[in-house]
Image 1 (tube, rainbow, N blue to C red):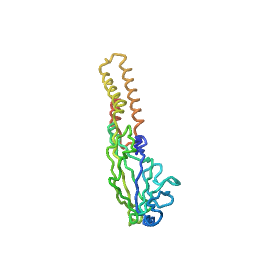
Image 2: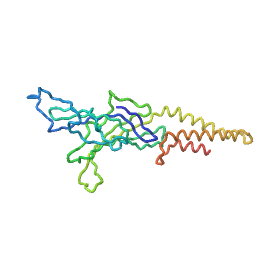
Image 3: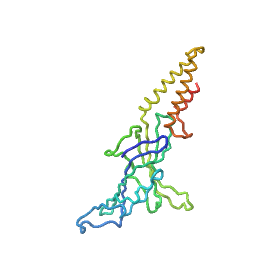
Image 4: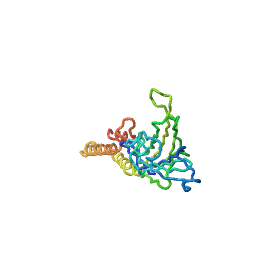
Length: 254
């Protein structure tokens, strides 16, 4: 429904989503033609019927999809036994960010949904259609990130336990995000190009001029401040370092 953003510093993706779950409950069915006044559909509380126990395992805040102790969630029950559940949730999932090409970077973030308590002998997760789509009615675009692609991959996985005879069902949703670079070009790249051009003027100033040392020191301190500002928005990680950070460091050395 909405992509709130991807925090480079904490490497957390925040998004508002809702799921469409449907399954058939053979016990919860009735003949609406002959009895119950032709009522073919009911809306009941989640606490009154069985709903699947599913977890978003890379959610850093609250992994269960079903809200514990919340009586405001409902399930639509039909007379043929088909159940429909629309849980909504604000996700905060971990996402490894590669900022090496900042501000022209593209990130791939995963939302990992898994069933923990039921193995694939009694419970299997599968997708309907593509498995993940943007809501045409509710979607709110993000000013910093553009969604390039959405995909869902259902599969079975083995738990690393002593008993490996059972597999568990899982769906991995992948979001491909591209940073909108216009803001960063104006506020970061353009000032840095100007600083690089000014830095080249050092060779023009005569050595005997008393202002050369002061000019060099001013440029040095400006580059240090600029590097500090860039570092504040970057994750404190040694796995990937922005090429822009390397370029600023070279300018300081120059």
